[in-house]
Length: 469
Image (cartoon, rainbow, N blue to C red; front, top):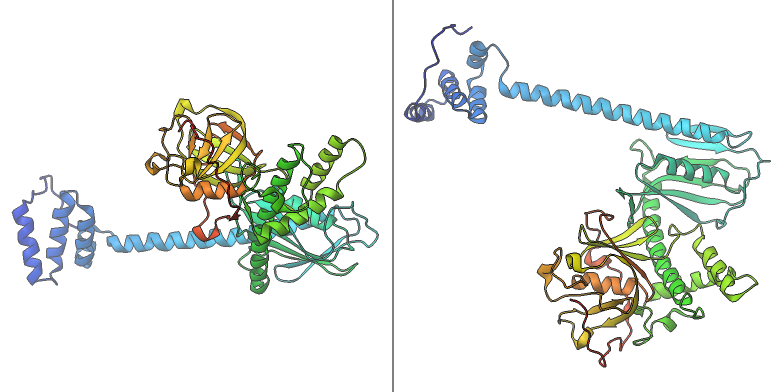
């Protein structure tokens, strides 16, 4: 133990400190010198340098201070933290596995005579009673059916499992539960959703095999990789179908008959309900048009159209149940592309503060290169809101994005406004509100942008646009 004294510790000058450092350069093995230099640093409040010196002092520090070296203390703390983390992860895995088993057992209550077995680690087989007749569902026979849940939504996950177990036992195939991130009240759409469960239904009477793909202990890497690839293709196709359904809905709500082909809506200005075409969107439109026409019933024309649209949007093979809308958040300077509670895009925009009005509008006009230029005040794309002087358009003042510098219009970056122009049809609803969108931007990488082959002659050379830029 160091000698105890009522006298105050001696104060070391900068000169003393410099001398000790110079001494150690020629005597680096002198542990007492390291200890004394460390005490100098400690008294001057430089604890990091002091700890380094104390570690070099080794046993001298331990003898005088009667405690472990600073590095030993840190190492012990790190070891304890790692042990705690390891125990926590182990408990979490055990809890997830236990909850999964309990959940399946609870769900089996819904299936009279059901039996469950887990013969292969994390694999769980569920055998249902042959006489059980679940309610009919709008599910395709065979193939793979994807079910979307939000991360952390245990109730949504349970509902997905319930639907899998209730499905018609004659419908063989696979069900994949995929998970996407949630942000505040929104489910964040992703082209690469995470598969969390694979349910394989064999021929009639066979058990359903469940694979929890997100579990680290699941011995299912091959199935996990295949599910990821399939989920990515499903997400891309779902986005195409959403855009096709939204365009068809907006078109027929204007009192027009649903066209036989997508390209009939992609004409020159002012008949450019949509901006262009692609092989993917034409295929998606053909599929949704068939759904729409299959949903037609007898009765008055208006009622038949409403019923057909309702049935088209109720299709359970799609995660989207509502047309695309645009939401502008004045507080956060964001423009979101949404469908129901799903957020597909979240762009940063420039606004006009109090000059940008709150309320509901629709896109009433779409024009390429307003006033004949892609580099003018309105950029390369413009979309008029409800035949007013307000519009969503590009800008030649990129520094104004994220600020309130416009006279009321909504300014966007070039790549953002061009992608939006391709995604939304004339007739799209636009809501200008405040404090409803997340702050984090949700914008694809350049190679993943949604783009169509632009139809020619979508400019309007006969008009000088005077939007409130």
